[in-house]
Length: 471
Image 1 (cartoon, rainbow, N blue to C red):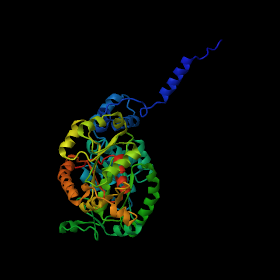
Image 2 (cartoon, one colour):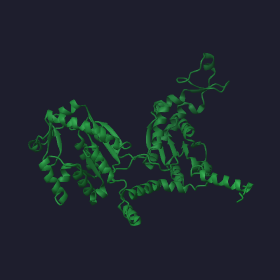
Image 3 (cartoon, rainbow, N blue to C red):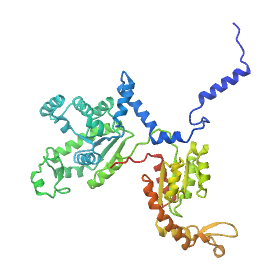
Image 4 (cartoon, one colour):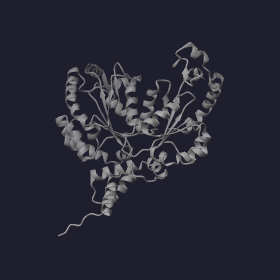
């Protein structure tokens, strides 16, 4: 059998095929209309498809189409799914109850799971609990699974208080496809926790927890009905802490990407707001993201420097503020801006320009307001000088000239006089109120600090998802 020799055309085809197989969506020279990535980002299409795929793989329905339709109709991808863990007396139940009220979600504890009246499984669990004073992991996980299928948990989410208690429970919960979005672990020294537990009191009517030293109710009728809960003696607390420490080190590896440890040895309100801030954040996704960044701030706030740093590190197109609107529209529609993203600074200057930018189809997906005190702006701008001989730029405070001879010949730009700066600052402040109202999800940054510290804050705001809006 004779072998056919490969001709020149075969080599071209093989090369083209290899080149095509090695090409991916990020390097292919495709012309992507700007509306496409904007639509995907606005409606979170990537995250939606990713979540659908996860649910399909977890539940493995025989007919995927009706399952996906049902899942989309539930519209519950963003409801709270929170686990709060912590040692005895760390305040986890109090924080869980406050979060539950603030987020209008459902609190799940061992006590309320076994107390459900119309559940035969809960009835079995109550008998088991009365006899053994604890639940088996299998029974507890079944109770959780049954509860999470109910309509209120599907629509408004859930908060697990002190569950899972062991690694076995954590893995059993994960196996069922029950995955929290946020896991909070409260931490405090054992000596503090033992002292706390000794003063703990509980309201039998509301379930609210109080403390004889740190959180005593003002109403006398509430004071009179408070009870000392079981298991709060020093010996019992020490035993509970020992068991907790033994289990928690094996539980934490089950939640590597969604875990936050909060110091519980501080006022309860501070712990709550740190927890609330965390559960309102979205975790970074793998969705393609093209930054369209707007930097707003007064003259001298460092917008140009931050824009240059972003362009240098991330390859964004740095669009100067001197560009007029007609040319700006043409520039933002060019392929490098569509593919790489852009950073715009010094524009829009007022509400009309902000509306115009949106109407042309170029809404920013990250907006930063750089805040600098008026005195700092005056100091930054009015002390700038230039050497007319060498063209070198100086600042009388931050970068003074080396000799008196150079200083004697330095000139000030007429635009940098205090009078001119005050006029421009006054105009900025009059317009900034409306711009801040227009860009409701803008991030405010203290720009009166080291420029690279400011850059880190801006960078964090770009690479991380924006916080969720919670009423």
